[in-house]
Length: 364
Ligand code: PMP
Image 1 (tube, rainbow, N blue to C red):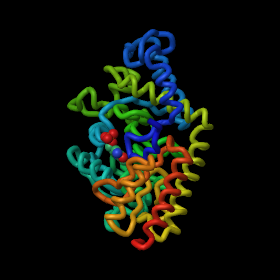
Image 2: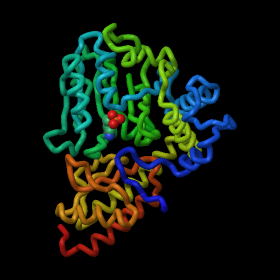
Image 3: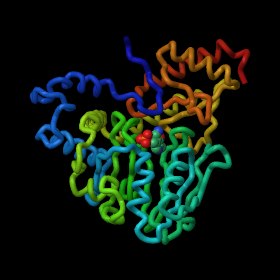
Image 4: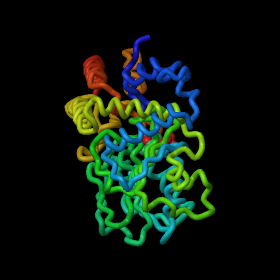
């Protein structure tokens, strides 16, 4: 069985080099005679794995010293609760920007713990753009402001990070962490489920400014208090050891490519190949405003649901996997995270051209 180009939104492709390294080390990690999955999380081998994962990530993202890196579980969805549980310590008010399905879920969860105000939304146009957020829109009393930097389902991205003044900015970066250079110091908290650009599912990354740790009320469960994990270097209980090991390999792979700057230029190249094709195609089109187009998740449509279904089926037969759009929006979606090679995007566009030619009579 040869490998396919997997356009899944997550879990998604991992770099082949990473998978092969993990395979080579699977049954005997670093001469330990054990698999990483079998190592004690307190062993010297695992200690080195988690410490290296953190130090390489710090270097890649240029994370300032006054930020902690936490390796947690529960997915980004658990952060929808952990963020308000930990940060609602002052006015118990928060400002949210509603840019799609995942923002909505974060908003719904935060409402359980405090007063939530939606200061900007793109729901009026099917979340096909990013609304403008300016400093004067933000309540200076708010405990935090929340944005979803990349909207996985809708295919939009914040090209500019809003200035929130002294109010901590919290970002769900699940689907674009490590894809472009960002200034971590603009954020209070960055969180991301691992299963797109970091590694396998089961690991959640949290990068948190130190002054935001230790604010949780006593009623917050120990496991949901950032302080628990910050004080114990993410080893309060058994962490997802294998997922952390895989993340370490992915971070090292990124480093070997030349870091995020190099990755960003490849990502821009890949996205341009697909958007350029979409913009001139007589059959396929992108529903997303040009200035808000994601580099990671690219939804597109044909003129009919029948053609959409046929396209997805024929693409699959060509080794172009999981191109069906999210059930809430339909059409197609190509998720082209860091691990998707340029050749994968070229193969997709070549197939789209072929499909367009064959079915042009049914075109738009
Ligand atoms: N936020 C965003 C932007 C996502 O794309 C996802 C998952 N696709 C989630 C949150 C939920 O993540 P998890 O499944 O890790 O809880």
